[in-house]
Image 1 (spheres, rainbow, N blue to C red):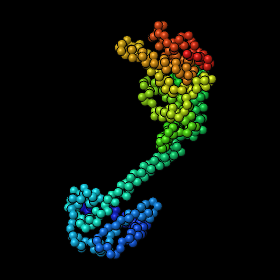
Image 2 (cartoon, one colour):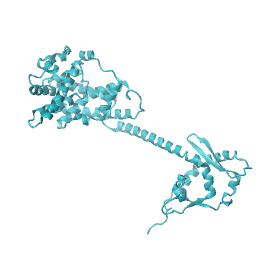
Image 3 (spheres, rainbow, N blue to C red):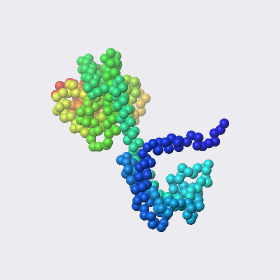
Image 4 (tube, rainbow, N blue to C red):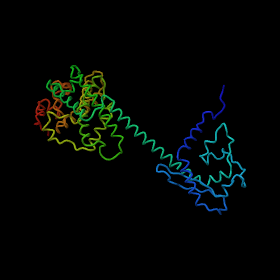
Length: 401
């Protein structure tokens, strides 16, 4: 059987119980009583008064009262029987919108009551707007607090969420892996890209732990108030920079191992933010300091191997017989830019000497590129590579004019 009672699911009783058991009625009555003390008994006209009262620390009460002759029986006064249609009021008094509906378009309100309400409506329209803004601010704050709480829960329960000390331990494991690969004349980038040995496979676990930690740190930093400089402190910024320079090459290796291209277009956000904050806040390392420890440094630009891989792709285009003259010219221009990029890094001792290991992707690229451009090609990089002057780079004894 159809239920035609629109009030069946009303929550009025529950709301009434809530109000009755709270101190809201008590504070409201006190506010009205205070306001009545300013109204004299000899008021000859029917007027409405309003006032603000901070009865509680967490809210403001807006009270409305009328003069005595209004409060006796305003509906029996002249014009008290007049009714005004709500359909004529909905544009002027938006507060009455909830009373007007398509199913009940003939609702009306007492004219005298409407006149009284009209006198204080501008004031009403102004705790309403403020209250709405306050509600929005409170909602935003609640969402931010909820986000922080969820992240704290995640960090406590997620098996990959570690402390900074645990992160340092996993970074040390990667350092050991890097040294092991260098001793085998291949470099850790290419060893991980090949993924043939047990240590190569084990590295994926270390990388995952570090990834989760730094993704969380970057997200947490982004929620902080905006200010100049990095939202990370110096200790975290240095840690994040070492992580980026150590681990991003492994992500690049994984990307190209899958046969994908253009890593930069798919670069994870936390790497971009860590690099951005470092460049905004820190002074670049001096070339003299880099020169002294070049055999053990990490390449300054964590995107270096992505540039190498794209240079390899460019060589493939130049080798293809069906490539147009325009395509070959464009790829050759990219390769010349790559040469200049490598020389600039070498000049500032900003690239790891492991790129010159015999089985590295960089050396394979160089052999391919040197065969394409031929003996007639003359550049700073070709001179350094053909004369094997690059071998002095690992000793910190290479000076590039």
